[in-house]
Length: 163
Image 1 (cartoon, one colour):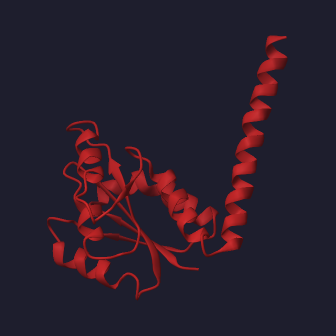
Image 2 (cartoon, helix red, strand yellow; image 1 turned 120 degrees about the vertical axis):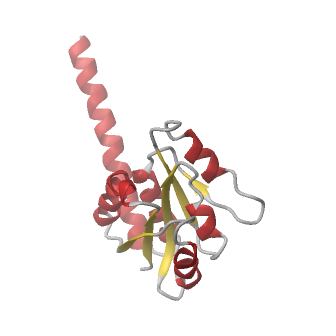
Image 3 (cartoon, rainbow, N blue to C red; image 1 turned 90 degrees about the vertical axis):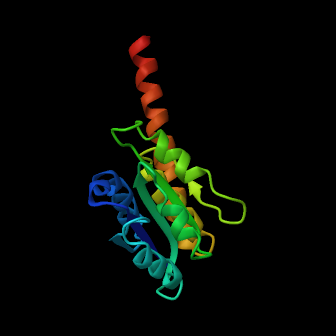
């Protein structure tokens, strides 16, 4: 199975991405995490993206706050799917990062999840990899089944409580 690259713009983004890394581990997906800045280490970020396919990555997840150009900078250097995670900052509560991540020019797409949506980024990466991996698709289906059962159990408990 291909690996997932998790790239953060700063070490301050790592706590936000813990949910992503945990979800990838739970699904049995190997990942590698790096700190690259679109602005302070543009050459290193570009080199990583250019070589990601050859280094056996299937998806790149990029998390950054404020100007949040990291996902777009990586997407400009690879045809692998790139998923952007806008990170909440103190400046504009993450809206700046969301807009910087989602507003990509035609021809350079970045899939974007919610502000601080690290877990969904991992799940979207898993769904992309599952296109070619039926065992991973089965694990995702099992997870969805567990989520469904949990919601229905909560509803049953609520109905018992109200009656």
